[in-house]
Image (tube, rainbow, N blue to C red):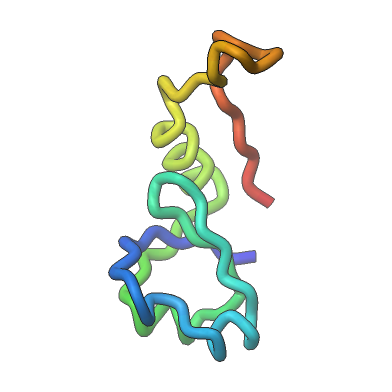
Length: 82
């Protein structure tokens, strides 16, 4: 897996053909995980290490808590990258 940071520019940011070629998954912090280097190049995505990408995701989630009605109320949301 390769990790990138890029800002989603809307329609056409990830085309159906690009996603079919190699799945492009988006995460908080404008982090994208894919093996589609052609897509990354086309959108100007910046390559990140897994550690850097995870830090971006963590920082984006910082302060986002489970809703009060959730069994884990008051705990920070955690999302581990593949």
